[in-house]
Length: 181
Image (cartoon, rainbow, N blue to C red; front, side, top):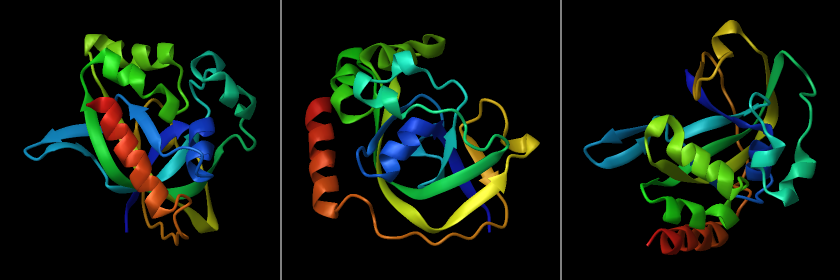
């Protein structure tokens, strides 16, 4: 079975995995369908990456979580993420309202919003379930580079209970929707 992994900064992957956050702001990895905006994969592994991680783009309370890659050339996948909601945000003002719900600074959100002169971002609300057994793979040539999605062939995982209780996740979803209104 092929399971996909979404590359995200190590710091943000850890904040999602420990339940501190449930929201990611993304530019890539989203597609438009007749039903609206969809993530290419509704369920995926978090792929912690150290590439492009920038302390200036993290809110001060998260900067102490930055670290060097503990095992260069090896990827430890911490959790399975399931998409609860995805919103295309085409207003910079609305995108900046999301700053308290995730780890990026307002300036980083604005940079992503304006990236490649395409003014929008996507807000992804995730249910995150830590893996019951570690999944550690050598980083292959196909995993390298600035790609959002990495297909993982013949990978089987078992995930535990969500790190955020459903009532808390629902409250986070409602807060997200209120901020985008």
